[in-house]
Structure formats: C-alpha cells, structure tokens
Length: 261
Picture 1 (cartoon, rainbow, N blue to C red):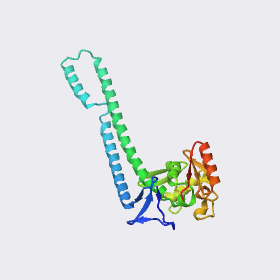
Picture 2: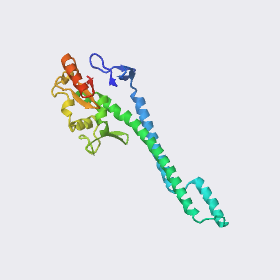
Picture 3: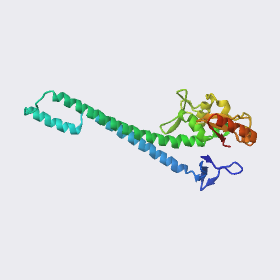
Picture 4: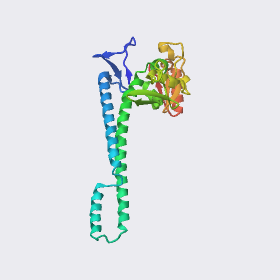
C-alpha cells in the first residue's frame, strides 16, 4: 500500500488519520494508535507464550522418559512382579523401550506446536512493525525508485524485531546509530546503510542532486527482485523507452513495474 497524496504532494488525512491506498485501489485511514495498541498486546501475548512454553518445557524435562498412561501400566507390572506373575524377565527391557519411544514422540509433538505458535506470533509482529517502517520510509521514497512492497522483499530479511524495536543488520552485524552510540540505528539510517552495501545500488538510487519527480530521470531500468523490473515514471512517459523496458523484462521472464512517485 502507499500513502494517498493531494495534487500538491501533501498526505491526505481522514478523521486525523493518514489515508493509504492498497494495491486493489481500496482506501483506508490508518489508525496508528490502534496499531500500536495491538502491537503492544501481541508483544505481551508473545511473552506469555514464551513463558508458558519454557515453564512447560522445564516441567516436562523432569518427567523425561515417562508417559503417564504407560506409568499406570508399569505400576501394575511391578505389582505383578511382586506377585511373581511376570512370566518373562525380558519383557522389562521391551517395556522400557516402548515407554521411551512414546515419550519421545509426545515431547516432539509438543515442541513442534509450541515453536509453530511462536513463529506465527513473530511473523505477525514483524509484519506490523517492519512493514510499517518500509511503507513510511522517507529514505526509500526520496532516494530510491523502489516501491515499499518490492523493497521489503529485497531487504526485509536484514531486519529483526528485538525488544519491540526494529533492528537492522548488515553482514551479520547490528547497525548502530551514529547519533546515539551503542543504540540500534533508526530504520531510515539502517536501510540507508544496507542500500550502500547493495551490489545493485546504482540501479535503484535516484540520481544525486535532483529533486522531486525529476530525480528519477537519470535512473535506469533494473531487475530488482523476484523477476520484477522497475522503471521510473519520467522514463515510462516516453512510449519508446517504456516499450523497450517492457520487452526487456518479458525477455528476462519477469514483469515491469513503474516506480512509485
């Protein structure tokens, strides 16, 4: 989605909320307060899930190798032993193997489910936080030709949500703030550093020294990610250049997209 702008380039506001336009043309007023509230709730829920998971894991480890239903059968077997009713002593080893196998299977199921729940919560939080930062990035909008949805596909893996904050990484190292040493860099500072390290940066950066829509006139068409090629709006206005870019994208087996203003 992208921010809806007036003819003068100002953000459109509805009931005190900025209006965004989805890819299907639907317009929605973004309620930042509600989004932050939901994010805080999700964060609290996630902490609760983690706590419960670790508590359960700790308790289960105390019973490692034990299945409750099988334990009842074992108790009866021990009673039978005392009564001299167990015919073959070799049944004990077989019983131990069955108990261990049943426990390992049950523990694996619990561990898989807990991990899936945590991954789902992490993905939801990532989408709300990192996705919002990409959509509202001043650096991406002013300095690159990339629409937010393409930028997040290419650079989203360079960000993590840690302690409720979006943290950028480059070459496996945290990107730290220049203004606040020791603290994670704000999103725009981090994405700028990541783009500097990007091998195809010259193809996605707008020409230096230009401003407004003219900033894209010197930008070339580039295959960015997932077979999607991008052409700036000024070049797209020239039928010859647009046809050439479209033909090149189709020849490469991809599609052509016009960069957001």
